[in-house]
Image (cartoon, rainbow, N blue to C red):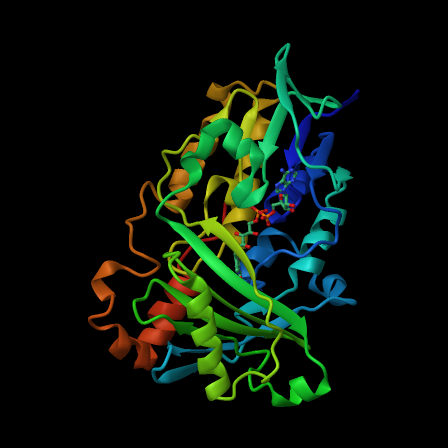
Length: 369
Ligand SMILES: Cc1cc2nc3c(=O)[nH]c(=O)nc-3n(C[C@H](O)[C@H](O)[C@H](O)COP(=O)(O)OP(=O)(O)OC[C@H]3O[C@@H](n4cnc5c(N)ncnc54)[C@H](O)[C@@H]3O)c2cc1C
């Protein structure tokens, strides 16, 4: 039987960041993922500079043979409404392809990888976990995303909440004629809000790749909403006429409050498995990475004693970082919904300083100390 200090279930940004951080401090880490890598992940692939900083991403190295699209502005508005273009004159975000990004981070982590292997059994024996009857570890970290089996094991189906985002997306490489037809600029992604403000659609161009999608906190008729969003984009000639018809769906949770059960004896949850995405923008990669760094700190301090009482500090760190409670605001605060939304969205000052700087770019949120 194989053994390790920490077994991480899931090799997405949360799992690979934790593995990388623990490996740097000399722990023996195994990452188990049901998918062989590289693998696709349904995601727009927009990341903020804070994420690249926390990851200490070597951008020059990363850019070799991979897409790292610099973003210096946004086109925003309501679907069927007026638009505002905000330009920053400097890079305020990046576009990446999850197929490349997640693979890069996982390879970089230095962990032992068991890929293409789902978690099938998890048993407690003599104070340690036996995973898939084949790996023994005193600590198992659930980083398996929204459908993480460790999260289900720990919390049952409590994980489903009103703050679930249902999204559909397509990402494809444009041929030459599609590239000519596409009006979406790589440095200026486009965000269009649904009239009820329960979600938004996006077009993110990354080099020759185009990612189009729509996510909502309300799971009624998402497919219809996606269709009508595509119709809107085509009507305005923003995207090529022949976008692939097959959109992939996925779900994830927005951060709600800090009191959830995220640790147990020898078990922790990080990233989407813990439901940490920012409620206003749906950005999930940065909180996934941040939660991994906080978890690493607690794991290292516990020095092999992974009783619940030693791991509870992780929940306090999350509460300090993400807030004790996030009001149920449906992506945007109730107060601004419908009533003034259309007006606000047309306002340049609001678009830049509130919608983008505060809600999407989180420029007010300090670096993780
Ligand atoms: C349509 C859409 C668009 C999005 N766009 C953005 C965006 O532009 N920017 C942003 O910051 N966030 C975005 N998000 C959110 C973001 O994708 C997630 O928050 C982020 O991927 C969370 O990372 P993670 O490592 O926690 O989980 P994941 O990236 O989901 O990784 C989980 C891993 O666990 C593995 N796994 C699952 N089940 C098992 C099992 N049983 N056994 C073993 N392994 C398992 C999976 O194969 C996967 O590799 C988007 C989400 C969606 C759905």
